[in-house]
Image 1 (tube, rainbow, N blue to C red):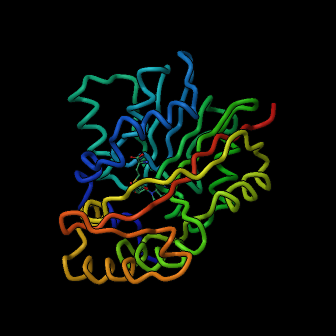
Image 2: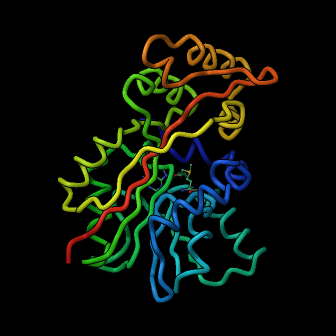
Length: 251
Ligand SMILES: C[S@@+](CC[C@H](N)C(=O)[O-])C[C@H]1O[C@@H](n2cnc3c(N)ncnc32)[C@H](O)[C@@H]1O
């Protein structure tokens, strides 16, 4: 089993600049789902360089960002200092074994990370455990429809060996229900995806990036329709999906 820290420790700075991770439209999605309130204590799991935590921080009491990779948290800490953000804390920890007591947080968020988690049921158990009753959690992660996923899975694993699996929205909803959550909103949002930047974020070698582009461009049938790869000025763009989920812990 690859160590996820090996995938992120040398590329941390890329995640402070990535269009997907930092775009205001993407961060607005988090705010729309989380509906933060002034007094809230927020846990942002697999916070990376803190993009999601920073989006929430102005609207809440405090945000704690948890991540396994120290170098990612170092970037978050640097940015917080640069921007004089004083209501964030950064903690090394595992989504599957959170170092917090039961019923602690008003909001739980996780974005662009569960596809790395080996045990999704365990991570959901922990999300449910640390969230206060009658409060909400936000789950955003890559979530392609099945035919596209069948093609993207190999691309994902060869791009970043710590990728485990992207769930579809339907799979998310089933798992959340089994974990005790009531799903309030769940949709898949499609983006026009900049393949080159995606590869750059993980510093993929040019030869491998070309090989993986070929996998996407040679997709057939339903997967090809879904991915609709296209070259613009020689650069590959294709469809990519995320689930946008708000789930409630009953009171
Ligand atoms: C793409 S980055 C996260 C991006 C960030 N959530 C954002 O919104 O910009 C993925 C992060 O997941 C972290 N990660 C992966 N598995 C983890 C786990 N089991 N527990 C905590 N963090 C984990 C990695 O260290 C990495 O920093």
